[in-house]
Image 1 (tube, helix red, strand yellow):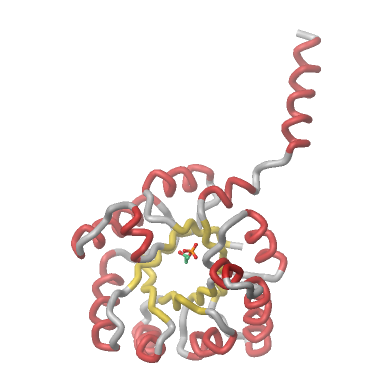
Image 2: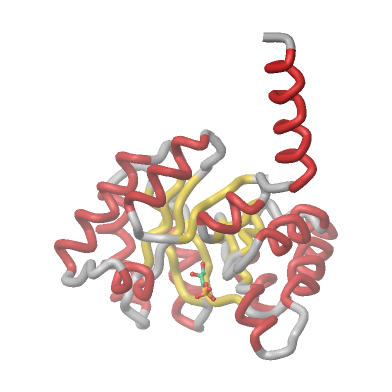
Length: 217
Ligand code: G3P
């Protein structure tokens, strides 16, 4: 399973990279705004800064919602750095843009996916990644994890190579559950990744090992 961090915060990206388990970064306009990164040039520069920290894929989202606009923006984003993956929303022109980029060899991440049908369309259009938002489904009393299972089933039926990128991960159990049902990638906050580390028996056990060692020294 690939681990992506879902943030535009450079310190958190560095922390995750230093942990040695980071495979990429996802961002969106809300995450950029949260870090105070506004204005086209600042945003483009920030993507390059992120690419210079991590080794893996960095999703950069288009703002346009019409085909020509998405193509224009996506080509600029893809030219920024070889690690950039163009993030495209699951709307009618977004599907056309996914196909256009696939034909040109530009990698894409289809975002704002909330149903198996949308995921099927994204795969048919040649998306590199599909991003089902599991936390936002949970927020409205719908089983987000079940969507990951359904997409896994459909993609396996036909051998689609589009990678399932479980997004809107909110906590550690989301990661574990997504790993159980076969998501290819998860993207979440640093806190969810660090939560995987923790077990009280590890802390108690280590404390006892060190205390016993110190008895003899
Ligand atoms: O990757 C998508 C993600 O940024 C959405 O997460 O927590 O805003 O639902 P959230």
